[in-house]
Amino acid sequence: MKKIVCFLAASIITLSVCAQIDRDVYDNSNKYARLLMYINSYYVDTANVSKLTEKAIIATLQNLDPHSTYISADEVKAANEPLEGNFEGIGVEFSILNDTLMIVSPISGGPSESVGIRAGDRIIAVDNEKIAGIGITNERIFKLLRGNKGTKVALTIVRKGVSKPMDFTVVRDKIPIFSVEAAYEVEPGLAYIRLGRFAINSLAEMEEAMAKFSNPVTSMILDLRTNTGGVLKTAIDLCDQFLREGRLMVYNEGERWQKTLEIATNKGFFEEGKLVILIDEHSASASEIVAGAVQDWDRGIVIGRRSFGKGLVQQMMPLPDGAQIRLTVARYHTPTGRVIQRPYNAGKVDAYYEDLYKRYDRKNGEIYTDNKIDFPDSLKYTTLVNNRTVYGGGGIMPDIFMPQDTSWYSDYYGKINRAGLFGQFVNQYMDKERNNLKKQYKLFSDFDKNFEVSDKLFNEFTTYVEAQKIPRDENGIAISENYMRTQLKALIARTLWDTSEYFEIVNKRIDSVYLKAIDVINNWDEYEEKYLY
Image 1 (cartoon, rainbow, N blue to C red):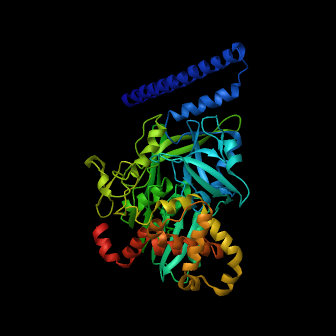
Image 2 (image 1 turned 180 degrees about the vertical axis):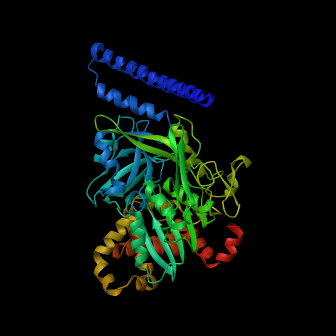
Image 3 (image 1 turned 90 degrees about the vertical axis):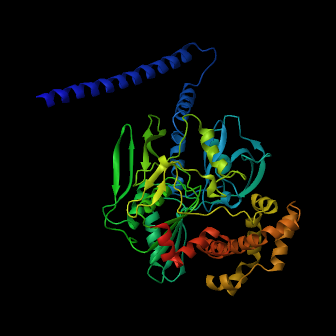
């Protein structure tokens, strides 16, 4: 009887709290409705009540967290295109912050990424038309940035830490719809797969690519660098391929969201074998779920730099007019209990993204040295098989830290890249030489082994650059020549074949993180003992 009384008392208290919450929502919504009524009835000028409501919703969401957003009815379909379809444009994910277009992420493999546009950049003008501080809308941005493949758009960008606005020329292109950007055999049994985003068909794409390899896969490098996430189910399904049956892959919970645990099944296609995962500061959300699960279960070695730290769960909430709210409802946790989301202050969206800029600071930025990352003891967690120490506090810290290599970078290279001249020159070159190259190189392996950017071709390129008003810089060439030649060769390969061939050339010639991954695979026992035990 006593238990029944306690249960009834608890139920009454719960109902009372819910009733109070419902009453608060009713009172405040009624208050706002009264405001709109007064404006509509008495305001001195004609007011657009719909626009006022939309702005109020946007402002409200901005005071919650950095990832709760409003999507108008016209934008709902467009917002899903990177995951479900294809379009032609400059290839960026963006948001409007304080009436300024901010790049959330350049789409990997797209034209904006190729000219050096970064997450966090602010576009203030498009084709010399000012777009900052004028009440820009998503619809207007789509019209300005999207367009037919091959057309050019001039962007003026403000970047944190750079004193003057930067000018970029982007050639619109078909934005990649495949999430597997590269897949090839490094050597017999060793597969390299670069996953650009977590789309609905990502796992099927991976399986299809692996089926074409001439040897069974016994080792894998999964490259999740610059992968900003996507479909949660795909991330869970991918974890399931690596982890044994019964192991927790990820869980989420929120104050009003029932805790959900995702457990591995027995359908994994790569539960055994050497596994390396590559991440960087732009790897986010679904990428962090996969890297965190692999790390927590001591399943593989994670190499690179600390990931972005986006671990908030969004749910799409429909509104009566067809618009939607992407509302944060829970937080992701890795199997050990680490919270993936890095800290933020409600309503301080600028400060949230500035954290990423701080990582690039030349003196104190963490992407250049792991000595700049200080983890307190309170953030220590223990892995679930070998009891290794890993850290929480936002993002996934790799087992092997690899600083960003800037030894090859020069201002000369930066100017060329921002102007889009590598791609433009290769397009012109291929117009003249495509047929000759196809006849000469039937197979990519022949091209990879025998084709080099000759001194003659490189001089043609630098002459072309000079004609585009960028003076020849001998010091810049000395610093960046190897990188520039590699970039030209890789772009030619991509034109003749595809993005897999592009990355195969770039990876083994100038990518220190990739080369470290190869070293780890080839000396697995040594690294396994050091990093997994």
